[in-house]
Amino acid sequence: MSQSVAVRVSHLGKQYRLGATQASYNTFRDAIIQTATLPVRALGRVLRPSSAPSQRTLFWALQDVSFQVQQGEAIGIIGSNGAGKSTLLKILSRITDPSAGRVEVYGRVGSLLEVGTGFHPELTGRENVYLNGAILGMRRSEIARKFDEIVAFAEVEKFIDTAVKHYSSGMYLRLAFAVAAHLEPEILVVDEVLAVGDSHFQKKCMNKMSDVAHEGRTILFVSHNMQAITSLCSSAIVLNAGQLVFQGTAQEAVALYLQQSQDASQLYTDLRTARRKSNPKAIFESIQITSGQGESRFPKTGEDVQIAVQIRCFEPIRDASVCVVIWDSAGGRVIDANTRMAGQDVTLSQGDVGIWTFCLRDVLLRPAFYRIEAYIGDVYLGGIDYLPNALTFEVQMNPEYPMGTVDYPGSYRCQFEVQYYPAEQAVERSV
Image (cartoon, rainbow, N blue to C red; front, side, top):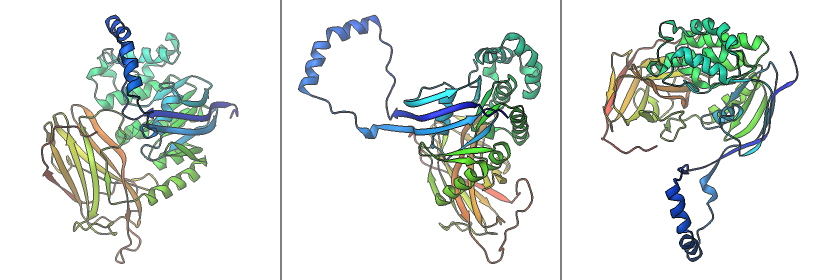
């Protein structure tokens, strides 16, 4: 493996001003008016001097981050929601500029940061493959050579000449990943988007990224799936509140992150201000876990468990599904429960607020720390809101089940029911 540097990050910082809006473009008429009123506005500033911008309005998404990645290295980027992972990848992909520091990238970069990033909705899948390849600096002959392989991997043969605005989010995701992985960029940057695909596609993508790594290309991989991090990556960094707190082997980084997750375990989380990749039609406002009797404490092995999620709807949705997934500390998916499995479809009108309570029966999880993933999706729109790390909680020891019983792979199929409680109507968006 070559030991030359593929990515070098030096004292990187990215600052945002909270609540700031982008200035609109001025017309010629606006310019004349501003020039004519300049003396009046200058006098106003003298008579009513404004205070300097408050430092509380400034937010450092990244601050003094330094590391380097060798060519052919697969490195994981780990951190809780809001730690700065996505901001870092956007800077590395040249989507946004840093506020401080320097980034050096040696090689062509292929990015998969959000579903359909770089796709033009009016163009067909075929046209978008060639467009993305051109953006990556590929010649048309190179794209044509890989085209059939890309389409076969994405499993969109029947729809390749359809405008991608008609694609579901899953079709978007499959084609976007196929383009990024098959057009042979020297550096592949992948964010958490793979987590919203089905298990078959996730496995397919992980195998492809493993092949890419063995071919000597560089991978920067963000995921909350610790099993994926340790299996794919040889090294990893841990971000916390915009700062790099650790760089080392993937196993050491995962151990540190899990310890941080344990320290943050709780029974309730307010999700209204959670960072999201888009402007969803509905959001999770909160999540809470209690014992089966509704007691405010961590559950014990073998007890019933209640997980309640509150959802606020901003635009009408129908035939949707609300899902909660429990993952263990090693990144294994252990319990999957959703409203459709319980025979319920979720239909909401604008302004609706509701609470869905998942009552899990006789949950035989060993004493350990777990995280809950929350997802709401619509059969017409695909994913609506997705929080991979909505809540971290602890299962406590039960003398009747001292070791727990989840020792086999795959999801643990426990019995559950779903109860719905409508809340008051609301029309104003809170985030």
